[in-house]
Image (cartoon, rainbow, N blue to C red):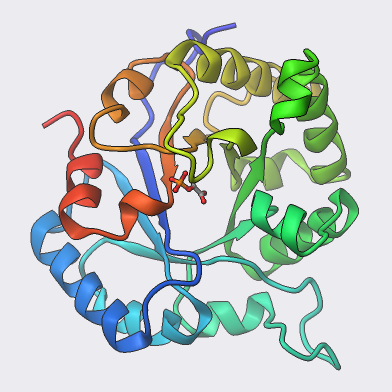
Length: 258
Ligand code: PEP
């Protein structure tokens, strides 16, 4: 079901997930180079997610640039005996505007379950940050024809008991696990099918077509394939891993239509 009811086109939402790359010094130098190239673009939302150690310095260096900063993960409690974790309140103080929650690497390598992801989403929303909530099927699920069932389950469990107001603050990232870091992006048709399903499911769960919720695609996005993805009616932006680590390629992705 294409997003034809939306009368006002949404700004493209382009986010870069740096994962465990760049020291704080490297991150600030990169952020400044990016800000110089992108020159306070008003017509799109641009977000970068550096490692925790660089959040504060990068946020400060981006002041006035219009580029926002995201944490890559957060704990759901505000404080406590959780060695190695940081909270949403800490990310807010470090200058973050968003937090990536439920990335497939967190699910697969660190055993995050839908129930924990749900707690994290609630904590992020309560802190005033915008969650970038990641969902996606693995190759086995896709090959077995379970893609939409998996996405539906991740949406229902991850967003359980969130309000309509909460969902309007949330960005959904469809990231097929088999496309992440593999150089094999979903085809525009595969991505569109998943995005339309996500939008339709959100409409059912929150009792209205949530036309204002960005649904973005992630998985081997590059300067060469972004345009064909962004041409799809239900793709509102992208979450970029590897190609966000190079200024030139990330700038080309952000400026995909210029
Ligand atoms: C990601 O990690 O969210 C991602 C999309 O990575 P890549 O662009 O490298 O596939």
